Length: 560
Image (cartoon, rainbow, N blue to C red; front, top):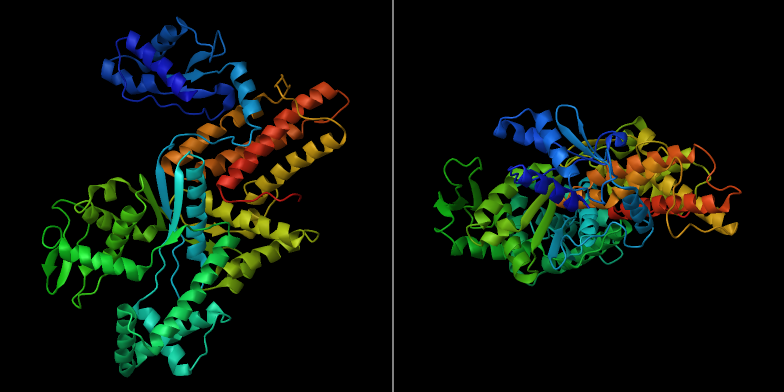
């Protein structure tokens, strides 16, 4: 539909002897001002030496010479303000969209049909419990995965665990020294405590450092030893924990590439491409960006000939493309790693250009907590389990009759919504007073609205009334129908930038429009035919909210 409208505008421009590389369509802030708007006249006015408003009038006149059934008829194209052109779509378009909005695959498209998209996210650090940073990463990553699945692409998911490191060797040292028995029943928190204690001992005692480095060497080399056996068991415990906690958040992974594996491959590549890409410098191997670049020089092999994080990420790139062959590789990290990956991809393009061309870095900010109870309980770097448990307690306090399953869904919905509503890289402050509200700008508000719509449909079915199968005119629902019709476009916009916040904003506006309409009068009354038509609108809203929330990784409870 948007492409059809853009084509009509381009045709009108051509008849006026004008050209435009692209035509941008936007939704007017107030739907009463039309269904779409373009600023093309304002963009071209200076170039052709005309007044923007006069040029807009010429474009409208030309378009009216060959009316299209997509548009409403006389007055369907209007000039507004300093030169905007507003479009009003025909009633038949909304009728068709309303019926489509009740279908199972509503919002799905074929924008990446025939393509393979690889999404890497939620990469854990062994010996560290899943914390708030992992939660942020998982929430963004899982939503991107679901948007990719709605694009018609073949989607693969990957995680990049950090397994062998000097820090891990420090933890192994503590476990060995304390004679800690580690088996499959060991809590991952025990391993996390050993990590913290190991770092402290290493920094305070030089005699410990040699032993820790020996342990690290044995782990890297895979030398049979007590430390390797202990490490293998710890790794198994950590990965079982990771899989369990990410599944509880709604995520699964098709493959894992471990940092130790990527480090070996990265070191090989750096040596292979020195001096073609990399440069030896003071006993290390570095990458020096081209002169004039804003990128920084980075060390890829240190003076001990060990791979740095940069080299490990080069190795990961090679493994990704060699094993997965993606048309698009999306990876999600903290915003503080933007400059790091800019250098890695810049170096990578000199090895295999497709690594940079087909890779996309999406990133997130940090989360803090508002409210004395949450701040005092969570403190430091909060763990996911503690965050969810604390929010569940808040939900139960505000809603004493809520069952445990629903409380968990509402809590995760509140957290994920708070994370995803912000643009990429923005820090957020989770406020339980607003984030857990069943009214307004929150995940529970969207869940509650979807449940309310579902309850209406069930009530009607119990009374023997089903939604209509064809749309009719429902007085007062015109604005709501316009919002419903926008869903596919908003999904494509979110996919275009792999940014879920567009979808969050849209769903919130749709829920507000529905609740406003719901409050205007009865949905179910003695007029069965009209009730059936209203129920079609209700069903379209329910399905749109449910589908949209699924793309955000948020479940809708059966009742609230």
